[in-house]
Length: 164
Image 1 (cartoon, one colour):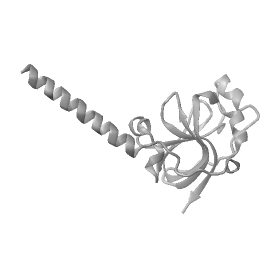
Image 2 (tube, helix red, strand yellow):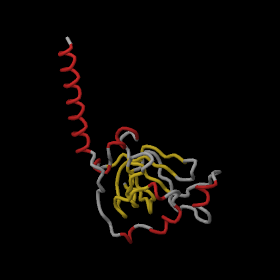
Image 3 (cartoon, one colour):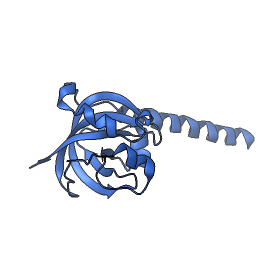
Image 4 (cartoon, helix red, strand yellow):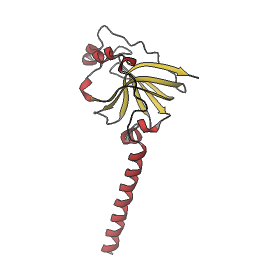
């Protein structure tokens, strides 16, 4: 009986490792395209709240996909959930905790009552126009890993184009 239980546990561990390997190969967390740095607005980084929490993977990239959510966060940023056309931009935490979405953040979108994020946005308001849920868009900006959440994002967004 004990030997059977050990075999079941071993098979379960092997199956779990196999699933994680397959998922991690599909969701590699790699930028879809590398754009010249000049295609992104580097000045936006002056207004990013706690920029040290963001690990830059690609200074400038673009992703296309369908908007699945739009949310105005307490820190003043506009959070957009994107179902990306190229799933390789997602990492395992995007899959597990962000419902297979890439998070896009337009900084300083709206006023905040918190003093720290508010200080980062002092004298600056985003010019990004919020897309609607269901819109197909192309977002250009810095491709980063948010160390607090572990998922990948476009943060800050330099521009959003509505595609038809």
